[in-house]
Length: 224
Image 1: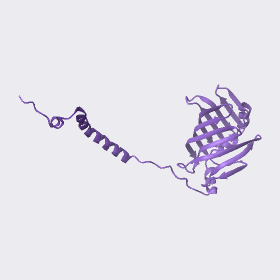
Image 2 (image 1 turned 135 degrees about the vertical axis):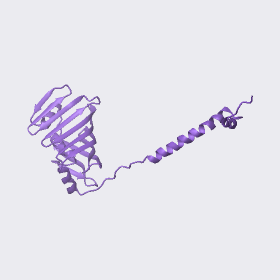
Image 3 (image 1 turned 60 degrees about the vertical axis):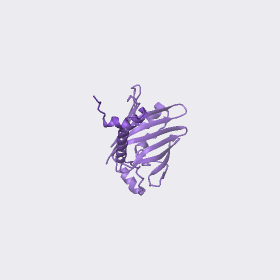
Image 4 (image 1 turned 90 degrees about the vertical axis):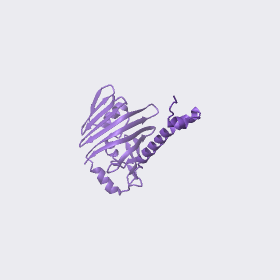
């Protein structure tokens, strides 16, 4: 009885094992190539939004109209003595500010709640400290005269109480400086988030002497 030969067997008869394997893989390879082409055709690369220039007075008024905001991102502190990074959450409502720093596990490193005439700070050990001024409270505990009272506006890109400031080509603050407790603090604005309106800072570096605080804001929520 003669054995039936399939069309595939007929086409591959007399070929080496390697040649047979290549023939068998051709349909799969073609299917894979086609799938990749379809996938790539469906993918679009979203270019970074180009900065849109505005006049400073208009931008300043838009920033001043923000009554409440929340900024989430990362904070990095660098000095000759130490360096650390933390998750940052800064909330501001009318008359109150809330700063929370946590590590990558979500453990609280520092929590600062302040309102006119009262400030409460909780450290990483859960110890609670209270004072009438947040900047003085932080100074007494860390011996660093941070410009906390100004950071509420500086974080938005408003140079409130700054001794000097400079604008970039889009008429937004690029640099500001202020003497705080006899120490010169400088703030450089490296980038702005164009996806929100008005555009808000996304990369900032606050420095004083050999101390630097890097801020990267990944998410803004604002309310007018």
